[in-house]
Image (cartoon, rainbow, N blue to C red):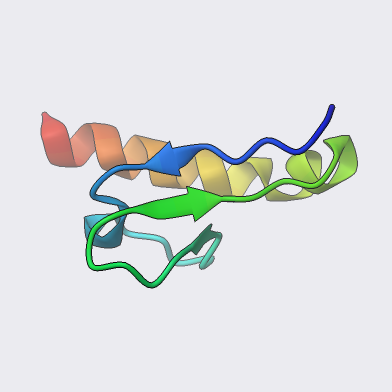
Length: 58
């Protein structure tokens, strides 16, 4: 896997206890993964961010 950097529009409003989202804009955040191992290490925290996003929008 090459670098994958999913962007979360309005990511600044998401609960990110593990602080996996990066960015200093007032709105968006990015999750950065440099390779497969990095993704595997951060996958659970990313899942929590996504679930929080779904819950916020429900």
